[in-house]
Image (cartoon, rainbow, N blue to C red; front, side):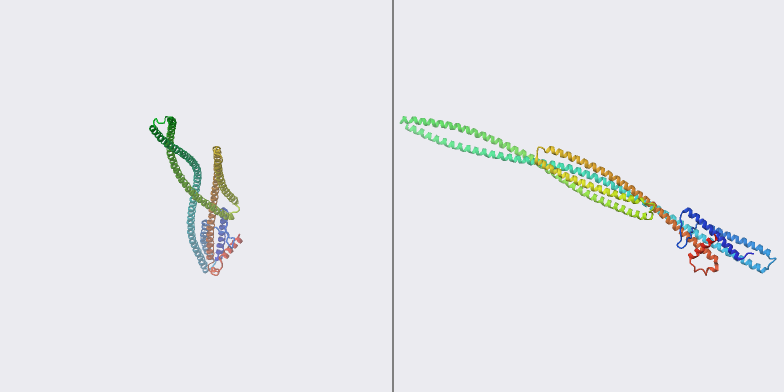
Length: 536
């Protein structure tokens, strides 16, 4: 004959066995997953799963079946003991066994209800885990899209830098060609001005010669007028003498001979004067003809030179206007290039800030995972040194450009000095200087190309390192999120299992549970653990 104390003791033994099975399954799960969650006050590790809950339900069904079997055995024993005991005691025992069976059945129903609630909660947790996985996939897709956008922006920056370099080279070439054409135009203007000055000096000399010839012609004309006046006066005197001779007639024959001699002398003088007049007239005519020819030639030369000078003047004015237009275009292109350089500098500063922010994030992650990721500090320092090297190369390029500009100015000054010093050796020096300029330009272009290639390689290495760092950061973030989700899930499962254990223990206590309801949850769990360890 079995009593209620024996039944409760058996139930407690079965519960202890179930808890041991539960603890062994928990240890196996912990060995597989490699995680361990400790509570704040106890070292009780609990990993409730669906399988463990099923084991509890099977245990309670087994307890119910066993209670029914024990009841059947008790009925048989009661029937066999009716011959030796009283009937009233047997009826009381049967009633007591039926009450215990009812209690066990009610507890089994409650456990089934708890199981359904746990299954619902487990389904909700699975749905939540699926939603979290979808969110993680969406975040990964967004991160990949952002990485693609960053790659596109980096490629655009590279293209813009290449376009800027090409535009700078083109602008330098255009400036050199325009400066050379401007210098050629200046030399042409100087040649035209020299020719104009030479023509003005020649015109001045011709005008002075013309004035001298006019002065000579005026002197000859005055001399001719004096000679003609003298001839007219002599002719009048001769006529007077002839009249006197005619009047005197033959009065004074003796006086006639000296008068005839005088007449002959006067006639000779008249003939000489006539010859001189004819010679002077021919000379004057020749001088007048020469003056006319020179004036005509001078006027023609002046007209032709004036036309050529006006045409050259118009041509030079057109070239000057074109040069002014080109200079304005070059200034505008310089302004555009300056703006583009500013925008590139801003982009570079933003990239540097992003790199610095990324380094800060990496430092924070290194504090969390310092043992696994020590090489990132060296990588970050190498990236900083590479950035410094790139900036130093840019500064060196700027200094080389400034030195080349100063050298170009010195060469221009040397050219001007050479033009002023020796006009004969000007062409040879200009050729030498042009050769030097070509060599310097070729050297500068080679240096720029080499430095640009080195800069492109460094930028490519930096991009690859950034990609690797971002990928590892994403992997670390994913692992951390997965561990956090696992920890949350296990903590929730732990609380559920602890609640189930406490609920079952409170129901197993029955009436005595009211007295111990004031005890704390952690204390009860600690006591249960202590009992389990003692029973081991």
